[in-house]
Amino acid sequence: MSPRKHSRPLRIAFCHPDLGLGGAERLIVDAAQELAARGHKVEISTAYYDPARSFEETRSGAFAIKVRGGWFPRSLGGRAIALCAYIRAASRPDVVIVDQVSVAIPLLCWLLRRPVLFYCHFPDLLLAAPTTRLHRFYRAPLDWLEQATTGTADLVVVNSRFTQGIFARTFRRLHGRGLVPDVLYPAVVVPSDAQLAAARAGCKRTLPPDLARFIESRDAVFLSINRFERKKNVGLAIRALAAAQAQASHQGASAANPLLGLVIAGGHDARLRENVEHLAELRALAAELGVAGAVAFLPSFTDAQRAALLASARAVLYTPTDEHLGIRLEGLVARLAAHEGAASGGGGRWRQDAVTWDMLPREARDQEHRPAE
Image 1: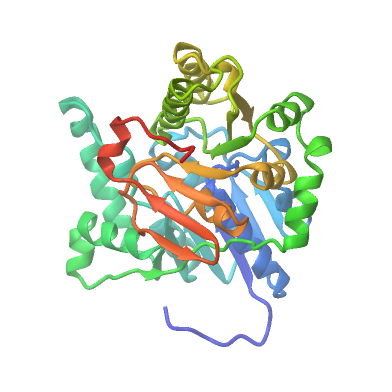
Image 2: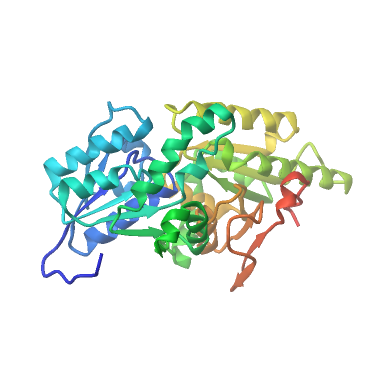
């Protein structure tokens, strides 16, 4: 798809299956907001949207959000196909931006005869790695379909050079054809010092009272922000806190009144069984390790609450394996140290001003960390 100059605003349609709270949604919302600010007419078509559980920008009115196809099954791209039909009938866009579900791409190309950009956050087939022979048999045609449909987009972009390398190793047929996706980094809003100070000062009125008191009672609070999914490995942060508590008690600190605290916040959707189960599992783990009183949970939060948490924390703990970008960047722009639990997702150790991003060796996932140091 060659770049063109347009004398008029474009009609731009986003096709995103579930507009909730997550890194992919953050990127889509930021892109829609910026394109709308540049004068284009932007519409996000999605199969599910709950205004109470969404980013604030989705309620600003800067761009339209249309919910269609929610009655279609979530699996096999059914909702994406329903969205394609709606986009063709109602939007008639000049360009379409698709992410997550590549099965929609060839249908959109055929229906609209318009350029389609596919944003690849990460190959889906790697997120659903088969664990049994039956699962491999079930996934094989879906994995083939993902590669075949991804290659039909007019332009494919990825979120980092790390994902660019994963894309080449995963979609070998596309790589053999010479398809090398461009890198389009997600945007991160950089707050001013005044905004950070205001967020810090407003913690008491922004955060739930119990959480505000918890943060005030600690000498140092560490922050973990992730969806409540097992693959996010948030239990590692709880184990690290328990190890730090144990070390402090050996040095004469009071184990009954720890000075360290951990806040675990993140997207939580009561519709999703794993979210509900994993939150309970994390609470149980904290109790089992004897640190329940030093761990606070905030399932789902507003943008203002996220800013308050970042302003109040000593550091961000990032625990997922084979991931990158995400909340650690938000921690960095909030002038926080961002500590990653496993050196497996691209990037390395670097310094800028007084901010440090340390990636621990992969083996450290199974060892006791000492975040207080």
